[in-house]
Image 1 (tube, rainbow, N blue to C red):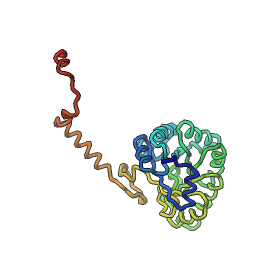
Image 2 (tube, rainbow, N blue to C red):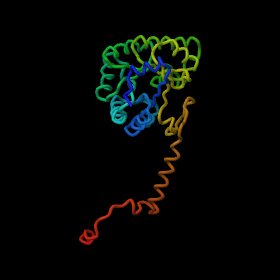
Image 3 (cartoon, one colour):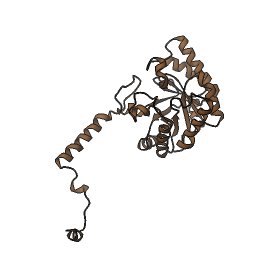
Image 4 (cartoon, rainbow, N blue to C red):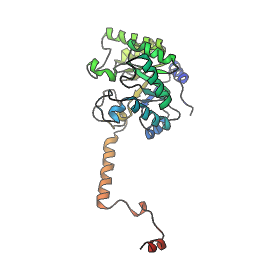
Length: 276
């Protein structure tokens, strides 16, 4: 399987082939996503909640993102890898945004970076792209700024709000973003945006008419149960199975059933006699 590239991703929109993206945060899961032939991996700042136990994505640092990106890059050789720029890593100045985006590429090994925001982030995105760094945009529900949005709420539910989202998408397209993530917006609005921009859209809670879809790995595998968004399809529910395995291990150790003879190493008899 050949490495997925930006030209390939753009071609998929042109031909109508849906784009697949899954979040992954570590080496073993990246290996499995790569083996499954998924087109893109997102090292999302959602790792703050799924991997680090925070209540939001806000505390996630550049060092966190670089650390996890390195692990994913080591595991996924054919998948196109996008890394989130964490909160306040691109908001203070354009120069700092370029520097941090460069770190995710140079130190982490990402193929592209993703940042949240619409019209207000267009100039920053343009400058990052001009520096030679591919950018994925993200509009609609933007988790880093949920306090401003009033929580995890669907966006674009009025005609005026939908028009603002289209304006955001067009601004990001013009700035050079090669993909735009649409999160938690009505399906008809996502369809309208997708049909009116030339770059691919990736939906998460945005309906079936986007050019592709992304899900958080822990949501789709039943590994994160603090909350499950309406838009998640759970393909497995691994949490109870894993807990059951841990409980069985505990019982085996307590009872002496583990380890068995087949799990043990041996020493030659003559060496054993010399020992005693």
